[in-house]
Amino acid sequence: MNQIWLIGDSTVTDNEPPFRGWGWALPRFVREGVTVHNAAVSGRSTRSFREEGLWEPVERGLGEGDLLMIQFGHNDEKDDERHTDPDTTFPENLRRYCREALARGARPVLMTPVSRRFFVGGGSLLYTHGEYPRAVRRVAEEDGIPLCDLKRDSRELYLSLGEEKTAELFVRLKPGEHPDVPEGHDDKTHFNAHGAETICGLVVKEMRAIPVCRAFLREEAEGKH
Image 1 (cartoon, rainbow, N blue to C red):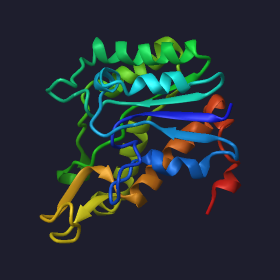
Image 2: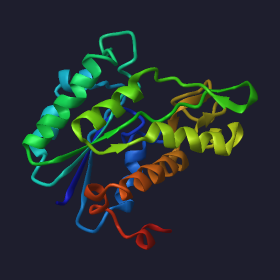
Image 3: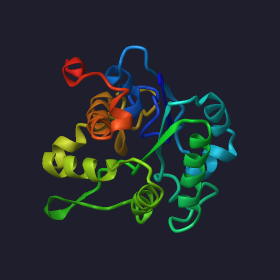
Image 4: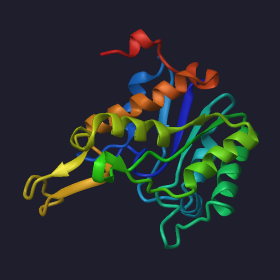
C-alpha cells in the first residue's frame, strides 16, 4: 500500500502554471512513503482516456493495495468524439475502470466532477454537469465502490464563499498579464494554485471519511501548515 493513482481531466492534472488541478496538491497530504501518480490529462473523458492509450500504463502500474481515484465528467458531456451517454456508456466506462483496477488488487474510488463557477442572479449557482454526477453516484452505490462527492462539496463551498471569493480560486488574468493568454482570461472551470489547494482540501476531507483512503493520508495535525 504505497501508491495513489489519479485519472481524470484538467481539474485533476498537475497542469502548467497558472493552471493547476487538485491532484497537484495531493502529495503534501499523504503519508511518508506514499507516491502519488497523477495520470490525469487535460481534455479527456472516460472514453478518450482509454482510446488514446492513457489508461494502459496506469493499469500496468497498479499493484496490490494501491488506490485508484477516478474523476471524469467535464468532457464526457462534450458534443464531440469524447462524448459518452450518462445513462449508458459513461457508467459502463466507470465500471470497466473499477473492474480492471480490482483485478489488479487495487482499490478504486469514484469521484463526481468538481463544480464549475457559473453564478446567476441572487447568488445561486448553475448545475453544469447534467446527469453525470448522478451517474457516478449510482455506480458507486450499485457496485459498492467508495465515493468522494466532489460535486456536492465544491458547490457548497462556492455558495458559502459567494461569487467574488469563489472567483479567487480560479485562473483570472488581465490582458497582457500572461504571455500564453495575452488577451486576458476569466476561467470558470480551471483553478489557480490557491484554488487547487482549496479543492484538494475537500478531496482529503472526503478521503478521511473512507477507511481505505484514510490509510494513505497523514494524520490531520501533520497535514496542517
